[in-house]
Length: 215
Image 1 (cartoon, rainbow, N blue to C red):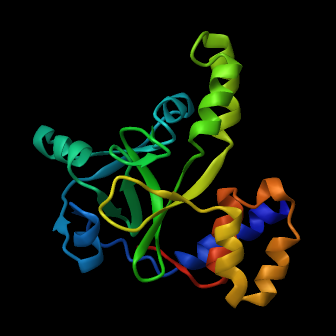
Image 2: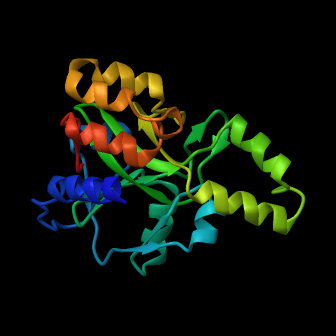
């Protein structure tokens, strides 16, 4: 509980300068990095129910304008949205180890000068094996149990190009990143192994290191 409050404080400080600028979108990673955005009117971001979040791979947010043509564009072609100074990443085409994230958007940050970090449910070959063993593919009750477990299993991924493939921020990645920040490296390495890839821990230490920006 103390750690969660501590991290929320860091995130509040990260977003303290929010200006609630006009909503806008980018159609590609390269457009995003080059600052090529298109303005977006009447946008709202709908938070999906927990059950829908799981069954859609942890893509938690659905953007809507009320205009069918624009909403179709947001669903299928737009890659990044900035709304109320928060970055949202379209997960529709993204893949990790051949697995899909889902059809809607996940919260993200700019990572350094040339990457994007986003938060999602942990997916991959290991998670498929666990889901099968838990009965997700063979029964609603077993599936509900696995869903409940996976909803708590948020991690961070990296986007580095227009490729559909993304990278998981692993424990080894974090150890390498924090080599330049010895005071934080020591703290991180002292954590239990099962916590080191969790989104809440990764975000905490990336913010401490000054590597995350709102967008």
